[in-house]
Length: 411
Image (cartoon, rainbow, N blue to C red; front, side, top):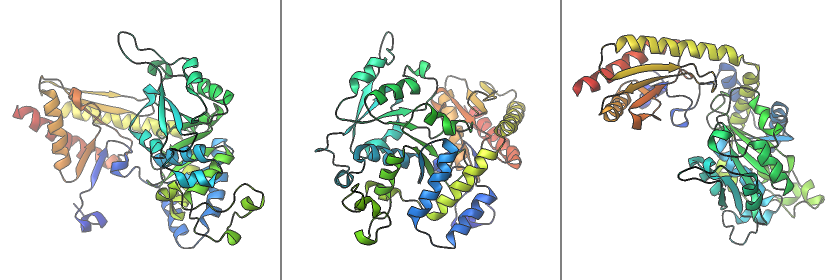
């Protein structure tokens, strides 16, 4: 297992061919990101001051009015929803997640956009109102009047999720969604957690009318795993800050006491629903360093490197598994998605069981080999070059070849 912190703890390292997954630690941080975090750790700062400064940098990068560093994209969904519900009302801030007596306690979402991560939205206490049809014989796509009719006095926000081509999914485009919501004066929250690269996506959603948009900081951006970006309207970002930061302060010495002087608030709200999502000065500094680096990187060149690595992995695996019955290796250049990948498919009648057994065998090794599991029910798994170093290709190919050979030949 080698030396280092993981060896001392008795924890096996991972060859990560699955991608920038939270359960595997996100991405590798560049030296300048780590240096920024170390520097930030050596001095104290008022977090609200640091967040305001970070917000200015995020606003410049996204074209939004304001920005905020969160502890991840899911935290951005929770905080953004809380802001849309409460605004500047401290009483509503303190009520969450009990919204039984609150008028605006619904969020409208396309049924096709429902996913496991909207738990973060529901955690505020809101009820999701779905639009769009499903069923047989012909799925019914969402129509503009479906959204128009779904928005009412109880609507706090509309949730729109970046999940691919809206036409294929049968959902309204973001510009269509934001235009309808704007007529009702309702904000639109965009979950764009994994929509980077390209770097242009940092501003695309704001340009298309999003009131708030959240990104993961620990994936393609290359920041700390427990970091994210929330960008959007200044009034909503202010509400986010009020529900996120430590408010155990005396009203007359509060940093933002001007909000009491101008009548915006009666006093500092108590610890908000976002307290569980707190982010440290180190994560804020690291995220900003990573964001600056992300904007400056040559993403087209990086894609070509990953494509070449995927082609190399596919070629070596194809040779290593040559002659093995019922096994097929293919690869995709990922040009449309920015995600090249290699697919290993077990096409025999018991292919599903063989593929699952091979993945488990890879997980039992030292180091662990992590692969994409989205196709396991079809007897396939994928290998992503996104998080691989060049010197890991050989060990990866050898481990996958051993695992697949062992499981297929055992049958």
